[in-house]
Structure formats: C-alpha cells, structure tokens
Length: 425
Image (tube, rainbow, N blue to C red; front, side):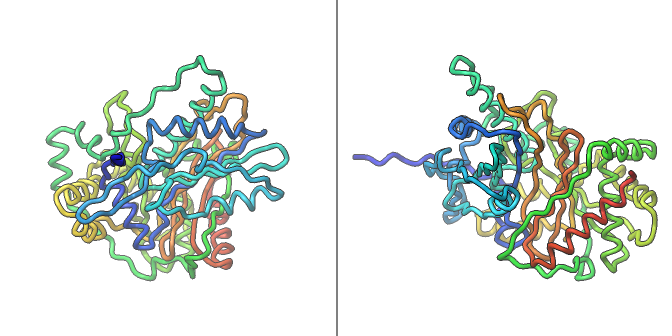
C-alpha cells in the first residue's frame, strides 16, 4: 500500500532569519500573547476555532525541516486538540508566566501553543507562536482571525466562516512587487551605515539562558491621552514619545555617547490599498541613533528622536537588508545562505518594538468580554534586550522578555518603571 506523501510548504527568507536568531542565541524566536477574559471560554469551541484557522496558517500543524541545500515546512499532522490545553489554577499570574516562557521545538511542531489558565471562573489565554511563522503584526492578524472563527462557531452552524487570508502570501516580495522600478533601484543602491557597538552598549545584565521570564508594566488609558497630546503639541507622535522615554532611561544606564536602538517597523503600510497578505513576517527595521541624554529633559530627548524618525519616514533604506536577504536566499544553497545572513542582518543590542493598537472591536469573542490583551516579542538572551509595546483600549502594556537571573529581573523591573516615569503625566 502506497504511503501518502506529506505535503510540503516553502520557507521564506524571513523564516530562516528568525531561525538563525534562535541558533545564535539572540532570542528564542517565539512570539507571546495574553488575552484575559471575565469568564470561562468554551475550550472545545476554542479548539474548533483554532482548527478552522489552519486553512489560513497550515504551517501551524507542520514541522520545520532542513534538508541538504534547502529548508521547508512539512505536514506533521498536529491538531488543535494538541495545541490547546486547560489548567486549573490557584495562582493565575504565576501559571500564565510559566506557560508563556515554554520554548517549543520548531523541528517537531506544532508551531502554536495556547494554554487556558482558569481561576475562579475566569480564563486567561497564554499564546506562544513561532516567530518564523509571522511577526507582531501577523500575530495580531491571527488573534483577530481566531476570535472571528470562535464567534462564528458560537453563533451556530448556519453562519459561514470568515474570509481567510491566503496562506501562500508570505513573502517579503509582496511589498517589493508593488514598488516602482525607481523605488527598487533606490533599495538596491542603498548604502547602510553600520553602527559599531561594544560592551559599553550592554545593559548591566548577567543573563541566564535557563531562566526565561516576562515582565509587564502598564500605562493607564488616561495617561495615554496625556502622552499623545503632549507629543502632538511638539509635532511628534506617541511612537516618538515611547522612544524618547527609552532613550532617557538608557542614557542613565549606559556609559556611551550615542544611544543606538533597533526599531522594527510594519512594512504592510507599503502594500497596495485593500491588499490582504497572509499571516506572515513583513517587518523592516529602522535604526534610531541619538546622542545620550543623561541628565537632560524628556523634551530634549523627544526632539532628538523626532528628528531621526522624521528623516527615516518614507525612506526605503530599511528595506535594503531584506532585499539582500531575499536575493541570497533565492540564489544560494541553504548552508551558504545561512553563513551570509548574519553578515547582512545585524541589529543593535537594545531595541523597542511598538506592535501598536489591538482593536477591541475586532478582537471580540462572542459571549465573552476581553478584559485585557497584549502581544510581546521573543525572549532575548544577554546582551540583547527589547521592550515590546501594545495598546488595548488606550492602556499601553510594556513587555520585557529576557533570559536572566533573579537580579536581572529586579533590575529590569526598576529600569522599565524608571522609563515610564519620564512620560508626561
């Protein structure tokens, strides 16, 4: 009897980029998210909703395979029942933390874990998704899709499933193909200036690869409006204000004259109007390099950050890295491409990613009320460090994911509180 050939899906250059980041111990290359409800979810319905999303993201059921000169995703038969688990808890936050920092095996799969943490008739969902599958924007799209599938299933069998994004639309070429020849030439000819960094750019963190943790801090909705209005009066944005506060905190912590920050940027803004990509990685990176502002005011840091960010707006230079990664990946055997990738893609030690607003009108599960939600990035290894920011009903959650000691955790807790303290009240 013939054995059915397992279906294979192509990998993209972004998949390999994130895989290498994990191999090089920059981060665990997994995304994390939390959704808090005011009551219990229907776990069977949730599993059915996850199963429905496989039409849009079949890679969730796959394993990642490196084979000779190529890599691919191979069907592995994972089901939603194996991805969604329920635990009864007497300490919700402790259990959410424990189930956020598990590192799955991308070469075995599945590529998604959802733990339903139940305490006192209220559930919290802890998500872990392989960053090779998508970026923060893609994770947000996935959570929206999952909530829509759950709501349709809760409404009954006569309701059609929502339209699904095309699983084949994962390549960064979705962005490039909509650009003019002149824009592509500008990308090809761009000359990026590397910033030489040393131990002076390292935060005073010891690191412990066996001890991952996630710390969250929240700025309330009322203060969000204050920050937004304050920045607007100075011709700046909330994003500028976020980085200005970060620069102020880093200026206190680092003995360096130049603060160099990695700033991931959602490239979906460059897609044609009404175009819907798949659940994928479509991120580029801006480098924000400003003088240290130790002992100076928030306004001075905001002016410096705004100047850099304004210069970057509309610039195609950040795409140069992704153009080169794509060209190398498409033209060279996998082993050679993997050697080249770290030379092309190199990020500063410190970074911030503003994943943006999670829209509570879209993240809506029928019969449930979402109390809070946030998405955070990968869990960094020393000396790399990142803060991820998401906004839900105007409340901003700052998520710090790190492999470190208990002393590192305490230091980072103080660091982020100090950073938040720079925001205008």
